Image: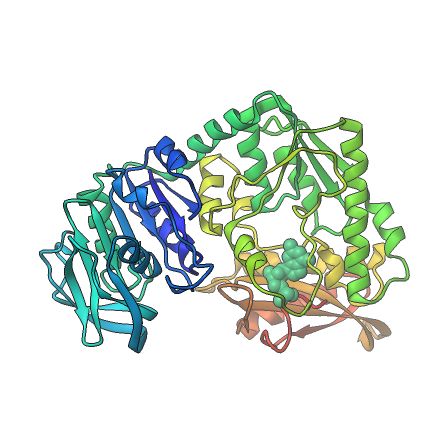
Length: 509
Ligand code: XMP
């Protein structure tokens, strides 16, 4: 295993990811990790990440110099490279020319990290300071016209540093360089697979939890499902999963979740389904403002969950399906509240528990999916699109009623079914139907109708922070439209939402 020591850079988890792509297990830990803890983990290599600070800053993150004497190879990247040189007697200065973006770097390919790398290769730079003089014992192995020490090594001590970012895609031969570090320098075997993540986590969870009681809020979404199954494999009957059906799920979703995770499914989750539909509809009656609706649902959810938790009694651990992008987002500074997000995972305060367990905290979404497949969770659940905690309530404009929920469930099921069947090269990243609060006049079978309009939404996006509307074929939209007006009562018009984010958001509320 390899330890990535986090000095606050934005690509930290990306480094871990690249290491894992080389089939080497890797964990990210804070830079404050003690020598003793590092020794205990017995890593084959250590990587220092970049970071926003200058090594001369008052509160700049640092580490114990003893780390360089452990006999474990260390690779410093960007700030990590500067820190390594600074601590070992080199000099770091403000670069006369700041380098940012794709940069041609000249390599001395006798450098151990640069075996089979081209003499000149494009790398991603992002720095204001640079190493103006490497620490004693280091040999320079790469440079640019404005950065004299783009890479250096002290082979005897097993210390390597690069000013650029090998983990970023734009560094053309970055993967090769990391592989050289991992295999030739650290001697990693490269035989780790995602299933070892599953195995390692199960083992670690068992040790941590012992005989403790564990509670998990299961939504049926990918993250909470994978977390629940992982916990169940680790501690079996000590786990209880509570699934709150708030009546705002997609068509048949509650039953589908129960089928997989309930008592007749393949997992032993002590699954409790709480049918709280009525409660939610009652609380939502009369609420029309999106933020009011979101808050009502969030609060009611906690109340239902709390009641169930009380029946179970005090628990030791509460499971959350937090994944790495959630960790990054919560680390961002203060931004305007566009929507109060409600996640089933975001409960506590109210529940009597000792510790939170977040087994997926270091994984990206696709890695969570890979773990889910490894755990045998059905593909249908694994490849699900994001579905918001407040569910269909934020896709029904204005007041939510049971009738409107049913209308939207039916329209949405038709839309999803037709997209699934359609022969289109790239499926949109998220698509759903929304029920507008608008009624209009139509004619059906010679009769006047005065019914609702359904809006179809489909977007392409990578990070869900910005999105473009998907250009679905008209013929597909036409088919969905005619099925919806024919099959869903009280809908007589279908609209296609062709707005990006910004200025719109993906959900309608
Ligand atoms: P917006 O509408 O903000 O959505 O553009 C961005 C992504 O977030 C999802 N979303 C939510 N997910 N709880 C969630 O777990 C929420 O309250 C929530 N609101 C929006 C949305 O489906 C999209 O993928």
